[in-house]
Image 1 (spheres, helix red, strand yellow):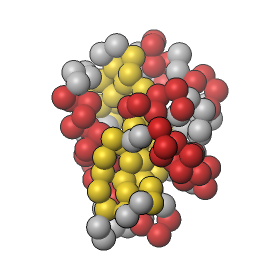
Image 2: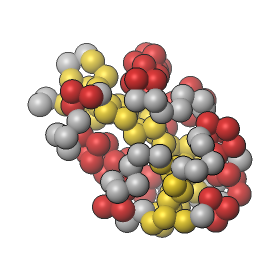
Image 3: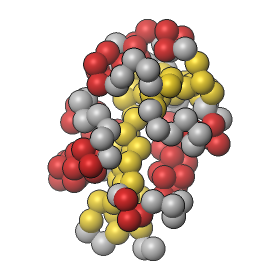
Image 4: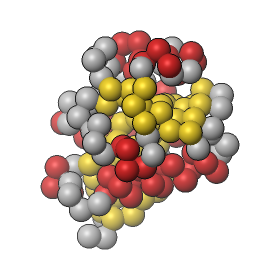
Length: 144
C-alpha cells in the first residue's frame, strides 16, 4: 500500500464528501473547516480523511473516514495519529469527538467517554454537535 497522508487541498473536498456520504457520516461543516483536514492518497485518489474544527484551545476531531477497500490496513490509525500530532503542534489542549460506530477505536489513543454536556461550550456550538450528529452518539474527550 503506497498511501501518503498530506494536508487537504480545496480540490480534495468533493472526494472527501463522497467518502463521508458512502460511510453515512455527516458532511455538514466540512467545507467550512476543510483547511484543517488531512487526506490519505494512493496515486491521485483520495482514500481517507480526517479533520479538526478549532474552537480556541479545543477542537472537534471529526470525519475520520477510510474507503472500504482500504479498511483494516491501519490507515485509520495512521490518519488519527497524524491529526493528533498536528493538534499538539498547533497548541490544541482538548479534543472532542462524537461517534456512532467507533467507540471501541478511539480509546486506543487516549479518548475517554464523557457526557455531551461536558464538552467545551464552543465545541457544543459546532454544527456537528447541534445538528449533524444524533443525540445518542457517544461523546469522547482527549486532553493533549
